[in-house]
Image 1 (cartoon, rainbow, N blue to C red):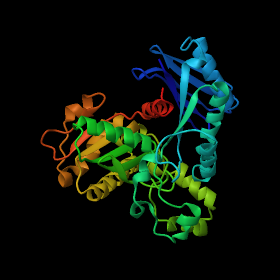
Image 2: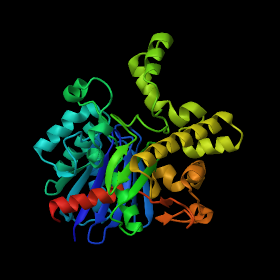
Image 3: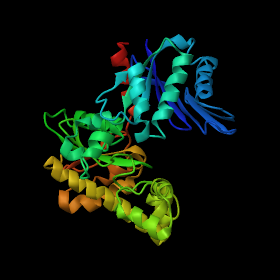
Length: 396
């Protein structure tokens, strides 16, 4: 009986899932939010119940101790030594890591070295790692990298057309993100297709953050996020791709400084920036339905940014066998899936089964037998990938 906890430490949050790996069941899950504030929120789900507590949590070390104390208090585990492994999500592994690894001093040093590429994430991941290492020192630790799945990209797909020295000297290149999700969903899709020897799959991970990946025969050949998660499609508050000269114009003509512009592109753009309503797709959809023209414009731009990448990857793959929707919007919005597929219908011969799209649950095919491309909804499960890699690498 081996228990493994999957951990996703953000700058002010700590998400977790505790698995019984014999049958991959989730024993408990939850999140600690607003770490560092007086009104931090600790949510834990166990035995079909959800407990929510508001209390001051000074830092990640305190958050981890609170979580582990709660596991004992609620008798979720009798002893912390039952937890044999801790799997840590790490956003940026650079070109160092093309797969998950057991964490040692060298891995820690490389994660720290790459913090300039993910300043909000990598330091938080290390903070989480140290906190768990101190609290349960006998548990092994594994790093699972968001960027690892995209290390199969070829230079023609990840090198930017700027002076080459910036790649050599400063590591400026496309890294992508959401790799753990894209790996899980594309692998599950291949299973649902009967594990064909050859497959051409486009995964649309659509949420507050969003990215698309072209997966050929199980390998990522291109992805929409770039040097950072700011690139690619329009997102909740991120702009996605824009003409770089816009930045210079806003600095020279409007009077913003670089930090203000980057903050604007990351925090004030996307669905929020265009609609003026919200960064939440559901709120924007509701406003559009009530006649808000800017909200409708935001939806129109969002859908067209998504299909532009699907079109790009259709060509890169030499056709497509399946398109998979996942993440918050992709999994939960039948409206978004329908609108996107309607825009693809004529070009790709896609036909959606409305009942499966609207009323179906879980992993499912939502295209009709007449559709030239299969369309799936596959809820992502990054935590399970993390737990599986942790079990495999630690030989649990």
